[in-house]
Image 1: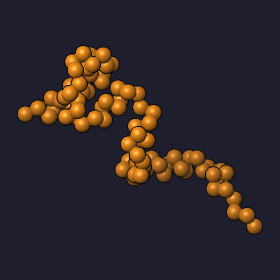
Image 2 (image 1 turned 60 degrees about the horizontal axis):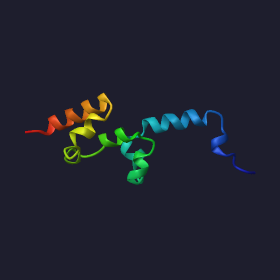
Image 3 (image 1 turned 135 degrees about the vertical axis):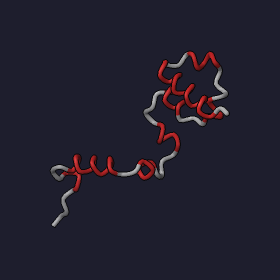
Image 4 (image 1 turned 90 degrees about the horizontal axis):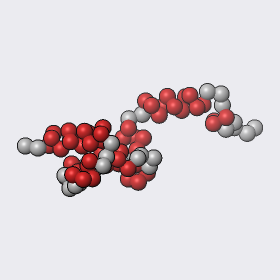
Length: 83
């Protein structure tokens, strides 16, 4: 007798979603290449993933071209590391 395909069982999607949500982010991302981790993000969101050292190299002109919320987040990160 053939085993049923687990993905065809009723409630599979809901059960799978709950499992994923309960899993630590580190486990969800384990094994993914950096470009896979960032897939689907808008370019300005990718900027937020950059290390502070790289953010410091962005020109003021480039920063001003970003959406206001992204500018504010970057400024906060830069202020948070200034000593």
